[in-house]
Image 1 (cartoon, helix red, strand yellow):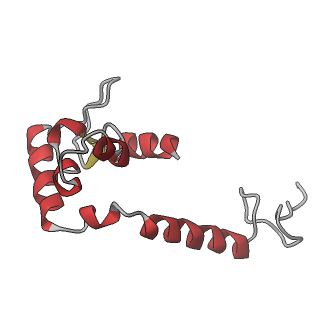
Image 2 (cartoon, rainbow, N blue to C red):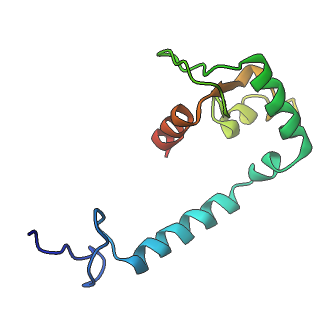
Image 3 (cartoon, rainbow, N blue to C red):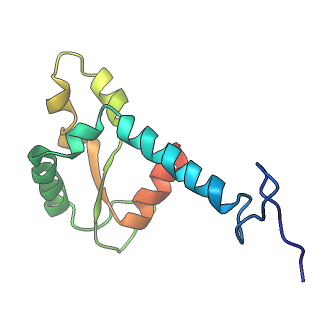
Length: 121
């Protein structure tokens, strides 16, 4: 049997398959939640305009548009060019309008959207 792994931040036992203990795992989650909540673009996802735009994109692209081909139904909407970058590229348009421009949105299955957003971090 393998010896238990220690948390790389303290001397407690690490959680199975991880390099941190339960205390540090919860701290990492809290830090991620704070980073997520501090994003100035979050407000655009929490309004009716996003729900309408999301429905329209999913209706127009019912199957995942992953470039390698995918036969899964679309469930997530992805900003092809990062939303902050896209807004900066359109200084003459209000951010509220630019954020919802459908030419920068693609419908993906959850697995491919998670893959892309995980790579972006």
